[in-house]
Length: 106
Image (cartoon, rainbow, N blue to C red; front, side):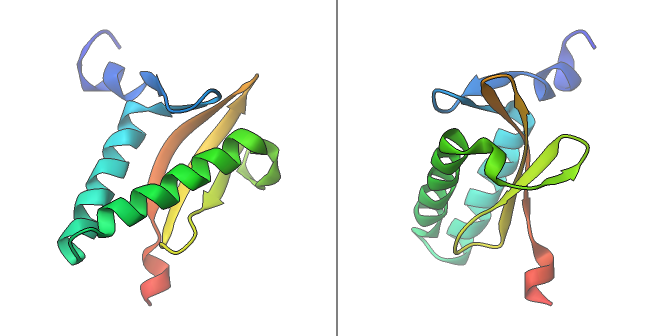
C-alpha cells in the first residue's frame, strides 16, 4: 500500500495525549459535522463538543466501553446518534471509524 488513499486511510493524527484518530475516521467526522450544520446552523459546533467530550472519556477510561468484536470497542456519543469505534494499543486509543446510528430514526 504505497501512497494513495489506502495509505492515507492508515495514517494517524494525535487528538489528545492518548487518543489518535485515523485520517479515514477524521473524514467521517468532518462529513457528519457538515451534515449536522445543514440540519441547523451551529449544530456542527455542538456535535464537535460532544465528540471532544467522548475523546476525553476515552483518554480517561479507554477500557470502560465493551468489546464488540475482537479488540474493537465502541463509545456512544451523548445527545447525537453517533458512535466511535476504537482499539486500545498500548497507551494509545486508536480511533478507527465514526458512524451515525441510523437505527435511532426508525
